[in-house]
Image (tube, rainbow, N blue to C red; front, side, top):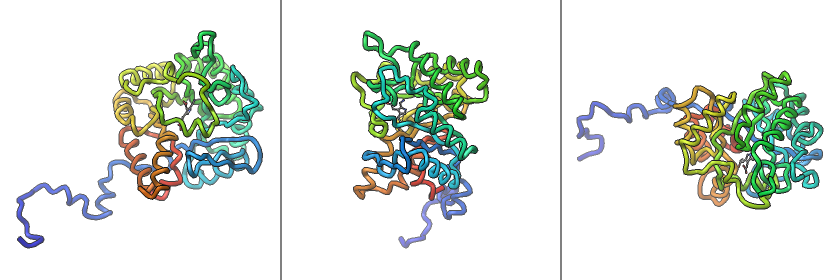
Length: 331
Ligand code: PBG
């Protein structure tokens, strides 16, 4: 048999639609654009200061002045949203994390100054106590050593109000306390912030993929783990219930986190809700690929592009990712 000799009688040949870039582009089902991406950024005190994060090659903690430069650069690339995380001085950490709602603290200043310098950027502010507590938990600890739900929600309200006053477009509770979305919505509305959005970390799993992020924030858990408030990775019905409750309580965007190991959760949530879905491609998902890239085993840019595409294909509308600069050339 010579090559090119037709032996099969095949009326349907799917390879016809893969013959050239023009045809492939024409039938492409999923498009990733810079508008889909949210850049998580770590802010530190000081000026002209950048501090690398060992486990996240290419990601740096930036002082506000450099952060503003970075935001302008991202904006030129078409990225219009950022998620802000403060790395505060250890001397400001307390058991109750009250620095979290200090409007003159690092987070308040960062929001104000970025909003002033680049007003068109959408600022998503993280609402959780862990960057501010000495014990590293997302909430207050009671005398039994438990994370106290309702008392923590009172703190989260203060924190969200501070961020709204400073100019945040969205507040994003990442703490997984029950009832916090509704409580924050009420408080925002009462103060006239009815246009400030809530992006709820609805299905946030107790994942081992957050360690590089905790390195970045210099957060060390003094005791226990986060399994009494973050979700068991084994559960998906519970995730759908969490998301439905957050939606009822007034969440504008629902998040699944982490992303690539939880694509089934994203897809099922897509079938359940009409609300936009965010997915967080987290620090550990970034770190694993960068480690393999730096060892010469795979190409980070291509892996990240494929990963983000799969997250979008699963049903996410927007993706928080540290990999923006690696994928931008593919978009
Ligand atoms: C904490 C918070 C975490 C992340 C975002 N907000 C870590 C945690 O829950 O311990 C993780 C993000 C990442 O890993 O990139 N409120």
